[in-house]
Structures are given as structure tokens and as C-alpha cells.
Image 1 (cartoon, rainbow, N blue to C red):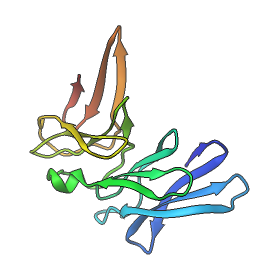
Image 2 (tube, rainbow, N blue to C red):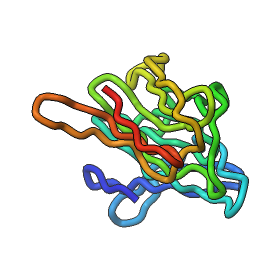
Image 3 (cartoon, rainbow, N blue to C red):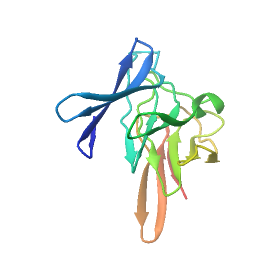
Image 4 (cartoon, rainbow, N blue to C red):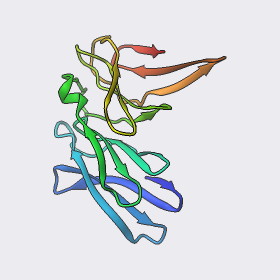
Length: 167
């Protein structure tokens, strides 16, 4: 779960097939609940992602690789993309366990596979921003991060066999 502005946001499963994000007040009263994608349907099906929150938006990756942006106040989906399907991503045995990385302009996710390793979408409207070349292999069970060295910012992303730095 993530607690933000005295509200608890937690992912779970609905009807054994859908990832759901629920919003609760601090006394446990449900505020809203939104289905945002399909659960991982392979080994040990379940929800694995933690929400990333910025301002009035929540960003998530579903168990099957959909990247979703929701309105913080009512849970309505603002935009949704499926780079895992669109770019033929590859996962390991236990599916997708990643939080979306937010940069100044983009929502970034690792997808793995032969076409690309990392993709980014404009975090405001979901339009495609960029993709990296593929380093091969599947996605890992880790989230990309930003590091800074001096004035240089770099995204570190991990695939199953490689760690890559992205300018």
C-alpha cells in the first residue's frame, strides 16, 4: 500500500482476473475502487505493482503489462497503454512486479524482449515518447530509477541479464 495525503491506495484482485486499485480513508472506509488491467495469469497469478503517485495522478503497471494513469480523486482512468503487447515484451516466470518511474515529462517502464527494453509515455496524455534498443532477455522484477552524478541524470533499468543506463 501507499499512503498519500491521509488516503491509503492498495492494489488487489477482483473476480480472479482483474487488477484493481482501491482507495481508503484512514478509518478503512472505501472511497473508490477501479479495475485497471489484467492480473498476471501465469505462475502464481496475483497483483504485484505498487502505485506511483504524483500530484493528482496515480500510475500503475498491471500484471500483464498495461501502464495506466488514474485520477487520484475519483479513480477514473485518464489513459492506458499496453507496451508489453505493442512491443512484444517478455516476462519471467512470476510476471510483472514493477512501479512506474516518473521523470519530468514521462512515465517509464521496463518491458524486455527483442524489440525494446524500456519505453516511455508522456505522463500527461499517454502519447508515446521514446523507446530504447533491446538488450535482449526478459524484464526483471525491479523498477527503473533515476540517479544523478554531478549534473548528469540517468535512468537505470534492469533486464533479466543486463543493467542499462539511459540518458
